[in-house]
Image (cartoon, rainbow, N blue to C red; front, side):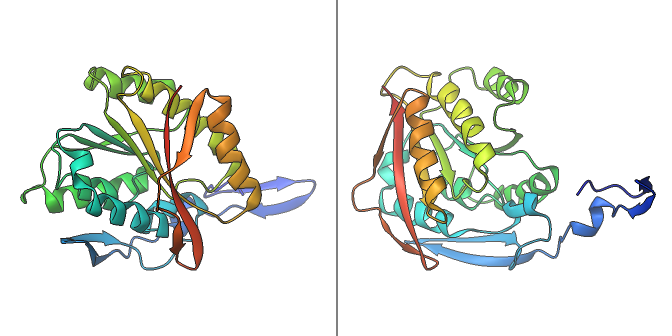
Length: 240
C-alpha cells in the first residue's frame, strides 16, 4: 500500500491512504549485548515495526551469529577497513570498531539511519573510533560511488548480517558486493554473510546469485548453528 496522507477515489470507491509516520515506531530502548569479552549497549526496538522496510530497527539472529564469530576471531579484523551492508542499529559494525579503526556502516532507510547515527554517537567517546554512517541502497550506483570517492582505497572486508529477506533485493545485494570486492585485488577482500534460513527458495537464490556474479561462495567451517530456532551459517564470498 502506498503511504500518503491523502484520500483518492478509484473505480468510484473512496480510498483512505495512511501517512507513513503511522508505521514508524521509535520507542527505542538501551539494550545490552555480550559477545565474548565485549559488552555493547545500543538503542534498538524490542519487537518488529509495522513497516516491513524498518527491519533494521531490531537486532536479528544473524547479527548475533556473526558477532559471536567476530568476537572469537578478532585477529581477522586487525588493521582492516570494513564496510557493513544493511547495518540496522549498528551492532555488528560497532563491535568491529573494537578491533579496527576504519568501519563504514550503511543502510538505505532514513529512519534506520537516524538510530544508527545515534548509536554511533553513543560509542564515539569510548575506545571505538573511525565509525561512519553512510546511506547505501543496494544497486544504487550514485550511493556506492559517493562512498568509494570518500574511501578510494576500498575495503578489506565487507559484512552482512541477516540481510536476506526479499527475493527482489538479492541480485541488487550481489551487484553491490561484486563492485566492493573489485576495489581490491583478488584475494584481498572478502564478503562475510551471516545467513539465516527462513525459506528454501531464498537458500538457493543466495548461492545462485553469488555464482551468477562470478563469485566463490563457501561456508565458514564450524559456523553452521541454530540461532533463534532457525539454522544459520556464515558464508565467505570472494572474487574468482
